[in-house]
Length: 240
Image (cartoon, rainbow, N blue to C red; front, side):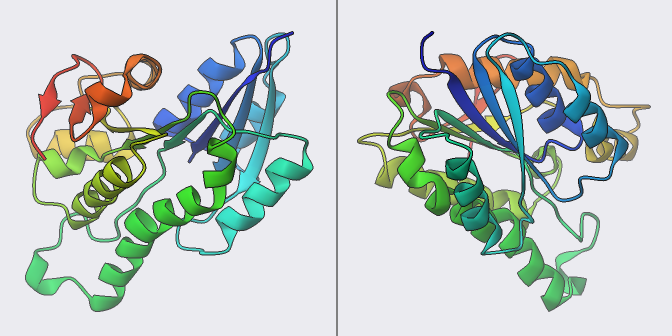
C-alpha cells in the first residue's frame, strides 16, 4: 500500500474542522491528526467511534491555541505514534474574546489573548511541525480566515492573514501556503454574524463549507496561492 496521506486539522471538536476530519476519515489510506482542547465532549466521543475507511485512522492530540508548549508536545505524540511526515496542515482553530467590542473599549488582556490564539498559536504550530512537513513530497499549509473579517474590521483575522503572508513568502521554495475564506457557514460565529445582518442563519451548511475548503486545499498550487486569499466556495480571489 502507498504511503498514507497525513493531514493535521486543528479544532476538530466542532464546526468546519470536525466535518473536514470526518470527510478525511471516510477516505481510504488517510491518517487524520485532529487537535482538541476537551476530549469529553459528545462530538469528540462520536468522532472517536467513527469507523474509518480501509487503511485510515484517527489520532487526537491536545492543543490549546494560547499554549506555546502544546504544539511541541503534540508533534512528539505524532512521532511516537510512528507517523514520520505530515502532508497537509489545516490551521482551522481560532478565537476572539471580543467579537462585538469597539476598539476603544477592548481590554488589553483580551487583545494579548487574541494575538496568542490567532497569530502566535498558528506560528507555534508551524514551528513544531515544520520538520514533519518537510518530509512530505508535496507539503501544504492552509489557514482558515474568519468570516468576521469580511463583515467588520477584525484584529485576530488580520493578524492571521499577516502570518500567512509571512509564511508564504519565507517558505515558498518548498511549501504551498494557502489562505482560505471558508464562506459564510452555519457555525456558531457564522450564525451570530448572520443575525447581525438580518438573516435567520448563515447561507452555507457546514458540510458545504468543509468540502469546499478541502477541495481548495487539495487542488490549489503554490503559484496560484502565493499572495492571495481564496474564497473556497467560488474560487474567487479576495483582497487582503
